[in-house]
Image (cartoon, rainbow, N blue to C red; front, side, top):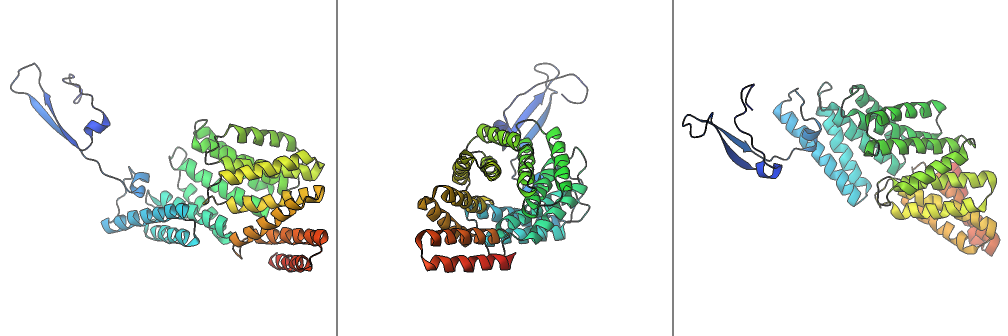
Length: 378
């Protein structure tokens, strides 16, 4: 239909037929009229860069050279992240961060793509914090997410992802540093916004639900709360069961459940909670890919319930496995990582237990050395 006139001709074609093709459409008021008009339509396929796709519709022009470099740096940053997921080395992650940092430096603060640029760098910084255990990267990620959020109005398509990123970083800090209750309140507010804006069952809605559950788990463990513990376990248990085993968030959901079961065992001493915590821990590790940022911590935390089960049942197999896990976890944990002290501490306790069980003085010496190192790092 052209303008508001009479419909002269209708044509239906699939996307595949239109793309990379040319179509001649003839218009005529009546069949056989020699004075008909025609419209030549050509459709061309063009692959957008990630930055172009994220900022499609932006009406603020950049200098061509700046726009080209911004797009290139963004693509290179994402490519390095992809390499990281295939080969999870710190170098690949550092390359990604450098490209995203350069993109931020050349992107004007009032440009429409600024939100995407800030989110890319925040995402990489947050991942760096999880891998290296440095809180400087975590603080930088939170600051970047907040800056990006200030640029997103309600209804902006970039806002839910930005809100989610900020909440996940805040929950991580709450987990590691035991921040005040105001963090939990802020996370609840942020996730309510995401759940209101996104459909039930969507990736964003599920991620918001997981962030709320992880925050609740942190509150139970960090703040030593027992109120609502049984209800939280039931909620986490249901969430872990309904999640497809190959879904991206299933390992984290199972890890949450394992930790809260372990907490209830601490409080009430029910051996069934300890046994189930070990089983769920093992399943979370099995499902987590090698590049999962929490996999080293999941692996290390399995050693604790195994040690506790040894202290109950005196099965030397549990003790040997706990020590083996601790040693492997230390090899995967950088010297500056915030998790290193508690891994060293539980390795020291496990080594002391083996000395008491077997009488090998080497275990006693190992216990003293590792506990001293743990205390030096705290």
